Length: 549
Image (cartoon, rainbow, N blue to C red):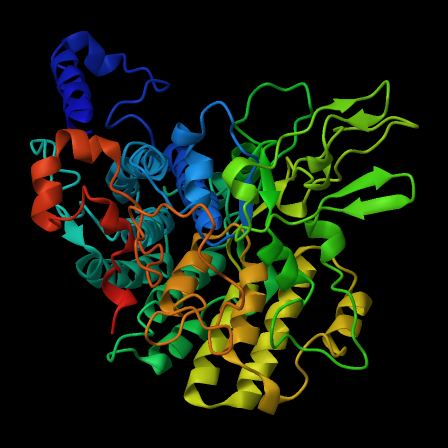
């Protein structure tokens, strides 16, 4: 990784010795000094979005939000199928690592340097937010990674730093970012709106994003004796309070014939036509789990129509069936069925597991709709990077832990309302659902499980869901044994085809991703120095620093 950038740097340095290049620099050629801050920010946001959301897709296989059709021809090497059995190999771990280090992180400091020249403090603040966000997220994802030495051009084999050390670095960095964002920009500084493709130039939203990230990272330490609940609430007080203060990436649908994937939603690209929803995910959305709120005034969750794909059948519309990850199905199925339009039939019965991508893209009159798709996987979907809904569920959890049941109930309902608003559910329908017995109505009846399962729904395809599940021990009791009565994530169990080499004991759960192959192949000494088990299967079930008391 380092060698590539060192060679580029030498090339630029040697070329710049030629006098004529000093007066004829091409502004469209990327060198270390030509691009201005506003030229750098949009690509930085775009590349980070890919890193962050692609991490979320991978984590969603582990959290059993999604599964995949059986890859009969290459099951042993298919990354997505392996992730459904909790096996993150060095290949499936590669993209978030590469997208962060090669495409994003190395471009943060050059942006800051360019911005300093014109006192573009808002650009500096945004860059620091992304740096803290990326390193914090991937430290939780992998457990350890290079931080101090990652940008040293002379270091071919950077040392690995533990996630706890990295969090100690990024929290002050986020404070620096907030201070920079509050500064008045210099007279020659470009407006943030010129390049901000995430928050449209809103400095206030960037500040709230930084505080929201602080709340998120501080919450990760809920298992530790040093956990500071009040610090989380203090950060939340300055984080998004309304939906329009959320940081959401809006993707663009350029039509079915456009071959470029540059503008389309990451989850549209990442899930393709082979990904399916699981039974667990649908059970949560339909309140079909032990201890779910219920009563005389139950109501179907309005989000089902937006989230769950449906297929047109003779009797109307059929919702997708969810894959049961505890059954034998994932071992050899389901198949990816082929549809024959001339006979109006599928090749096999696995058509009930409906793809998440809309098909056909633009149905004509009389044409059968094979899938309505999902709100999350539309080509022009929204990337929910940090939302008011998440903040409200964090508030609900913290207040519940503090014993403030009434405050927790209010925040729990606010989180559901916020998520429904993001999905475009009509306000009247939302309020009707929130007043039904399908939602907890009494503070005395609210449990941590109710809060976290609703957050699980609201943070679909988010890497944060995996952090939450690890912190709350999945559906296990204090000894690590599956316990439906006391477990938080009701019904979450080991998959039938679990990667037994990495999870030999029934108390073993996915706790971290494998180290990327680049580091295993070219930096193994530093990897093993940081963790001697890093090349062993059992490494995957080894808790990261905040995932243990």
